Amino acid sequence: MKVFFHINLIFLVSILSSNTFAQNQIVADLSQENVKISTDFQGAKILLFGAYDGKKGDDIIVIVTGPKGLVTVQKKEKILGVWVNTRKVNYINTPKYLSISSNRRIDDILNKKTQKISEIGLNNLKIRIQPGIKVEKEGNWRQALTRNMLKSNLWSINENSVTLNKDSLFRSYLKLPSNVITGQFEVKILHYRNSKLVSQQVNSINVSKSGISAEIYDIAQNYSTLYGIFAVLLAVLVGWGSNLIFRKV
Amino acid sequence: MYYHNLRNNIENFMYIYLPIAEQPIHSLAILGIGAFLGLIMGLVGVGGGFLLTPLMMFLGIPPPVAVASVANQLVAPSVSGVLSHWKRSNVDFKMGTVLLLGGVVGSSIGVILFNFLGKIGQLDFVIKSSYVIFLTLIGTLMFSESLRLILRSRKGKITRGKLHQHNWLHGLPFKIRFRKSKLYISILLPILIGVIVGILAALMGIGGGFIIVPAMIYLLGMPTSLVVGTSLFQIIFVAANTTILQASQNQTVDIVLATILLLGSVIGVQLGSRFTNILRGEYLRLILSSIIILVSLKLLIDLVTVPSDLFSVIISR
Image (cartoon, rainbow over all chains, first blue to last red; front, side, top):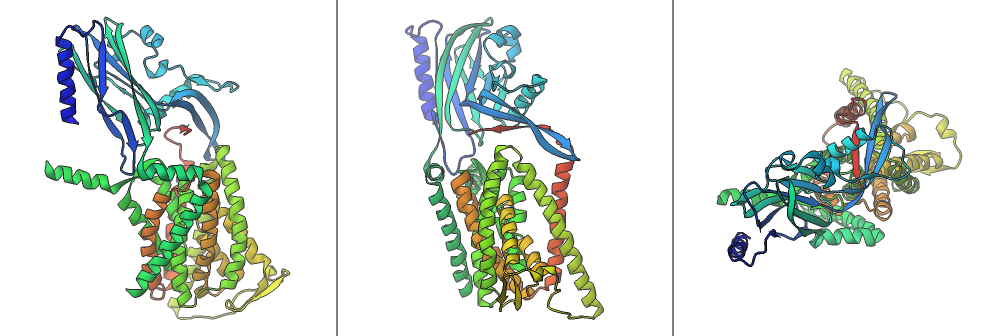
């Protein structure tokens, strides 16, 4: 991996030094484009690296967005002395993974208005409540969504995590937690100069289950009854087998 | 550096990714928990599921997966336990069959109920509060009963009364003779017990031993020596039925989690059933009832104290 990375860097630098590298361009690559969730999966750390046509003071923001879908926020209330989930709000079109990385504080790179327009920042996401649901104090629910997603490490803000080198190279580590959802992840690299977008590049990461883990999951989904019967038979066999072994001891 | 890598590799190896729960878990911890609970199960005939399910939830396994996978693993120690009790002729198969007929019906109802509660978002609450109610009830009953027995035998006055008390339950129709248990009772009673235990078993991820054992002793009046083997016998079928239904209805059985747990528990249950004739029953039950009361207290505290965050998030897959 490391050798591969160095070769790429040399390649990138050579592109940069020759004049073929077009102005205001950005190129990026990932150390891993396919993340396989197998039985030893504990999360993944992916190196994102690349080159950009930069000037002193330029900034890089990297936004990784996972599959989007339904996320439900529940609220507990005290009923007869016990805390029970009483209300819920469904958010649709919600990214189930989101990480925003930058070379310095995002507030120093972009003003609040630009952040809002470019949908950068956890509060600027265009997430909608499922139509037909009436909510009081929507802000509390939205805050709860953000707070819980951050707590589960599925959402993250990583300021100062993009390393810039000689205004031409950048690198950053993207961390996918072990509870990550499978699917297509979009990696968007944004290059800013004086708060203006100069260039951007989009890469993607595919997260999928693989090996025994994937096969078990598939069988459990597609041949569920058979899977259940097999699970029981396996347990019976182990129970019976252990009895045979222990009898002889 | 090399040492560090080696250590890392070993640590990585210890973690195993659960395909259905969709998260990694420390395999040795799971194996150890399985063994400990197997030991309790072998000793007392109860206590596999009711401690295992809360422990799995404490480790962060989603409750639906914990409940269904624990039901799956319970099959193994039950089979193994029944075989060794059978050798010592401690199983009443006739009573077991009647109980399991009710149990299969009950656990089917339970899985349907489980599915429904999940849909309306009250599954966690129902699982936890059922635990509080039943553990408190059974724990207190068992504790006072075994304490009474111990105190009585310390005084040296071992009074043997009737085999069991007769009450209105013995006046029900459809009476059947259970030779092994020396009982002549209505078939409705064990069937009803089976149904209730089956529902709770499916809903709470237990074999139902901790409910059915006291029920067999106090409601049916079965001899204590037969209770463990017979309850294990019926648990096999209730757990098997629950597993198959949970797998086909809800796809929540994690076979990897269940397999690690059951490997631990079959070892434990074997060791446990070896000591069952050495350790005295009332002392065992006193210890177990203390654990039961502690677990129910812990769950009750969780339900009553103000949550650190009133809001929680469910991410649909």
